[in-house]
Image (cartoon, rainbow, N blue to C red; front, side, top):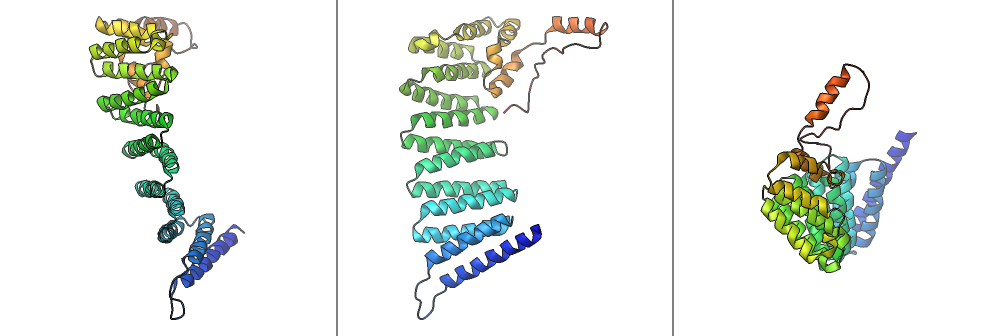
Length: 313
């Protein structure tokens, strides 16, 4: 029954394509192609191919449909067609090409004046691609953020710049991550979103420490205390100050102890992964565990602080 339904959908699609081709033909009595009717038929054919899971045929026809919609001046619907082409290309496991089609859709939204739609598209697609290619994800997040800025949607822009920063952080480019987080700081300051600003300032401090520059980290901390009363009064203020003190003293054991604070283990996963590199093995706990394993075969394993965790996103 399933095969019969698929076959019928393919046949239906082919019939729509034939009708569309007829609408596009010209003759002595028909000087101009009937693009509107052709678009309608191609659109129906795309739907049939998609239902039949003929992804390549649907993709190719979606691109052709988009070209006709551009001729009509319907950039919004052309963008939708490129989105469909991208989705079909994803089904074919050709992710680099899918990204190009999504980007084309975004550019068409912009050309048609729908910057909001483009920003939402870039945000959604960046999330999909960040596990496949961080370069694509970063590019999409940045494009979305810039569009949000142009539309005076500052909070959305801050969110997208932060997402881009988190992806750049995973590449190890701390200076570039810091630049974006400074931009986020400025946006949130203008919006007076101090609740969210505290966390961004912490990330900027940690970036300085990751870059072996505790003096710069202290400067960010001191400036935040001066400029933002909410930061100075923040309940986590003392934990951050204590961590900076440990770095000032260059005391690895103290750094390790203060990094174990529950708060530092509950922030952005990539920061947690990097913080764990400062945590020394708990030798006392290891000795206690060795002594107790001879007396019992059960018990709770101590928390392990690995150097790296690939599953953290």
